Length: 182
Image (cartoon, rainbow, N blue to C red; front, side, top):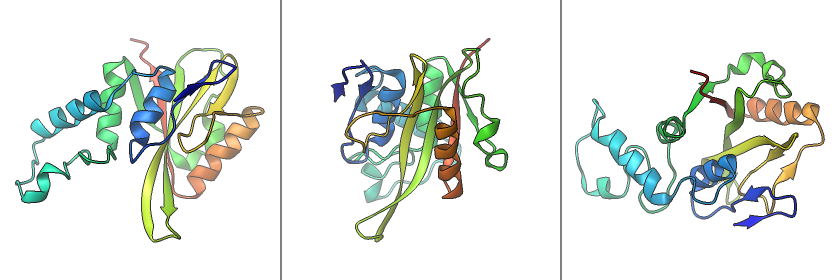
């Protein structure tokens, strides 16, 4: 975990806690969320799940919304965590492409973007998904991917649009994080 010279906060990847890292990077704060707070959200979601699965010996590790050992939280934890901070999440319609996102808008409605990217590791044997945050900080959009050694500043909005379109083309999902205007 580090602060760059330009004061952009960036956490590095550890185990499968990419959702935790992407949320902290999105909020630009070390403990905006902790492993304990995300686990509590996941447990609460499980408690109120109308389709609760029956218990089995693996249930202590593989919970419905996360893996207790490695993290690997799901979309439900992301949405609940963001709502706790007064944010709203909208699933971007991939058919519209990234050009339909108001990346350089004058309103402060768009707080940031969270991407869910398909990844292959270990020579393609292991398939998984990875959470990545992007946010505009002091007029510059950054890719705050926890797999990167430091935040990547995009050169301009066209580069951000191209990046998001490439994520969509590989099966990634785009979630717009909005400031709650209500």
